Image (cartoon, helix red, strand yellow):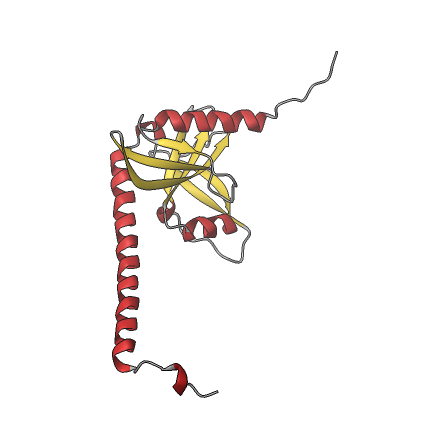
Length: 183
């Protein structure tokens, strides 16, 4: 018998998790994998009907063949990954697909307590009431819009402050003429 490569089980589980996630998305939203994975497994572009919004949602997607019998799923996350995701300007959703449940559970990164920076990893507790198959995507979109608006407002305020500073300096400092500059 000819030997051929075999597909590891974790590849199958990862593929199941991506398919399940994409099937839960609104039909007009689009997800894609980034070129490099430093903690963002999927980027979701949010649309309103056929119109692009410019809004994005970042997804950290995990999967397992074992289900917790409690009211939450646990997921080990590297502290470095948490820090990387926390610094992102976009909203981040952590999702864990559980094969025996044929369900994924989610939590917004903002709701995950900050880890101890002296550790390499920490445990995230994802409530099982947060079922991806029952998520209210409109609420998520509204939250993404709110966060984006706040960040853009802060960015615009900073840019205006910089413009005002330059204008003020121009008013109080006389222009320098090339002949008057000491050597």
